[in-house]
Image 1: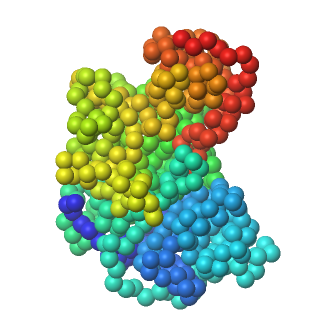
Image 2: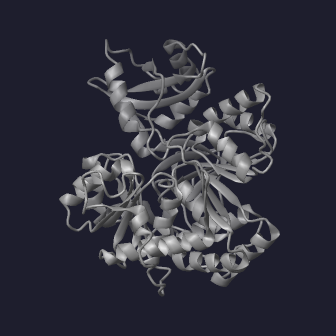
Image 3: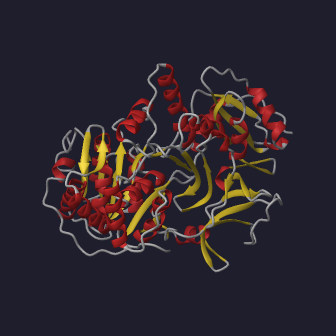
Length: 554
């Protein structure tokens, strides 16, 4: 890896010191009407670290963060790293059994959680003495009948600050990613690897990657003095890699992170924040966010009160569907770049699609970045235009592997031609022009009558049909065919869809065996906290909705 390598907390401390010396009131974090200066960011994190240390949390211990996007999320991340502890992203929607699973899987020593999780966290902690500290953010604080087990966040950040200490680029960050079985997997990164990933923030700004930590600080100071320090709004959850990496990279550049107080997507609040805070980079979750955001832009324009989006230069999404038509509509609303990436917690990018500022620059193709390739089962590169199916592989800045799972680590992190790659299982072909056709991950394959159908390929064919807003494809168990290709389809507002024509349209575009045997129109599709389709929910819905006689198989 080229560029700087250091501990993230040590880098953030150095940036905070330099920017606070330049301007004591310089803002690092914004949340609604709240503004947190760089000096306050560092001080509050140090005091939270002091509280955690007083409760026995130290180097190598894991600290869970079950919070909505907020300054407290980033302060907790900073605090854990200050202690040389390991921050862990935890889904704030978990029920007791799910949270207990995560605590056991990761051996959490502390948990900083939203007030809505307080009762669940207290119940889990009561049965696990190893969970030494539970800090609660929100009005409930450490009360609500759980005195002694919980401590209020504002009390925690009033403690004596933990002193700074030497740290290592080898200190860890643990990122949980959803597994197909429902049990999350822990992906271990070191700080050096995270530095490599977030250094892409410099390239997006057209600046060279600093060679060392001193260069990181110098660049942040220059950006502050020039007025070019970036402002990012992660609308996607910080528990998701895209929001996490974007925010950390932005902070290292001396920028500002804007988060929204609303607990779910509020398009009007988001665009108001973009306009008010002169946001220049917005992180979203594909069509799931872009479609309602476009609806609000249309409403405001029709009302004669359009939003001022002149500051916005880039909109970023990763790992979820972002349709070409939605991109075109966004680019008709402003002049910015749309960055759509194929990536995973395990590494990437595996593919990149850049378009803008003009709407006619949009297409549905992804290009292979220099760090990626598509490999056949024998490890050779797939020949462009051959139609051969391979899997995406990415090298460069990679995690260390899966937590306590050497078998899974060896399966996904492979050495090919003497180089270590992440190969999480996303299937693709390479067209004659070198662009990618994505087929989906092995866990999203429906085996029907001995034929393999990639769910994402069928989903893309469905969302390309007029009037279709979203689609998810799953396999429903069938005695004769093994699984039947089954689609749940969400119509666009005002659209009237019929099931058989949708299935027929897919059959005209794809091989007959890929045509959905059953299509059901549904009002919406549930998603995980990271914005990805909840395929376990979809499979259950499909089984419940699809009853009746067995359809013919073509």
